[in-house]
Figure 1 (tube, rainbow, N blue to C red):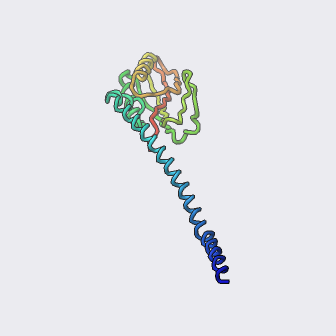
Figure 2 (tube, rainbow, N blue to C red):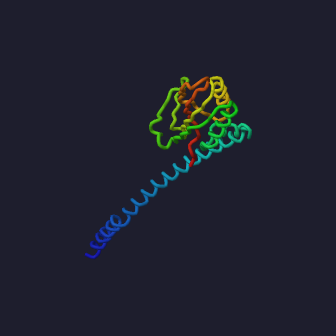
Figure 3 (tube, helix red, strand yellow):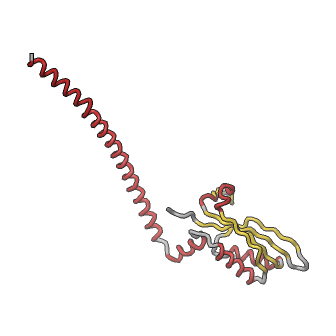
Length: 189
């Protein structure tokens, strides 16, 4: 009798051990293998991104330092409104114009309102840049104002003229109110 009961108890004990110990351990091992696959995929993606980053860094290093300085002046990594205003004031002084009534609006408050704009057949998405709108007034003759605009166009800082208004004054002098938008690249993280 003991001979027949011992194998039955052994089978029951083996099944209990399997269901209460081995099966949960198998489930843990299976979930760990799934996590390991996710980590392997992330590692492969990171390696591909590192390769792409190295290619872009090598491409950047191929540019001359002068070209990089000009590119940084054209679209800087941050907007320095004081420098832009100082440059605009200097251009106005060069053409014997009065410069004043300054108002600066950063893109933080108006980023959602800017949206997309069609410019010379290309879509410009302003959310790809950090912008700052600068409104100022100039007083001078029309010829001085044309010369001022010519110098602003030739300047290395990228400015988009959004609005020009003018009011006629006494004599040849007129007041011009301009709104320009300056751009910078978004901060990298």
